Image 1 (tube, rainbow, N blue to C red):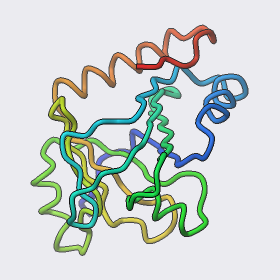
Image 2 (image 1 turned 180 degrees about the vertical axis):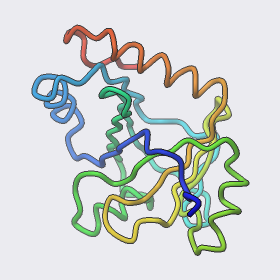
Image 3 (image 1 turned 180 degrees about the horizontal axis):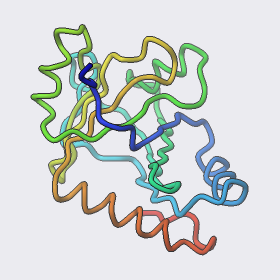
Length: 173
């Protein structure tokens, strides 16, 4: 059987209190440092086919080879994060996988009824799509298109985690 997705490289959680979450993961779990991206600016973002504008902060770190992401949405704008919260859910909201070509990957998934729910790009050119694989909570998949900028940045964060000595557990960018 052909796998529809590559290996999971990221577990992502929607949180209500980012500072408390980071403190817990630094001090109790021994994971860090986390790079915090305040009020993320998208080049373009879409939610359910409409232009999306929402205010969120993301924190990314590594626990071994697994990337851990925490997402805090600051406003009530429609998004997959607000969908998750409105169902009364907490915890892991999605898993991230890398893809070489986002458009080709989405075309392979479409006959299975797995379609993009939220997608867009960053000013660096990195593209992503969250797809409708969440038939049970936490199983949404984010496809992250591989490329020199994002691959290099993820590598830098992983190397930083590999050298982390337990101090300076939060790096605000």
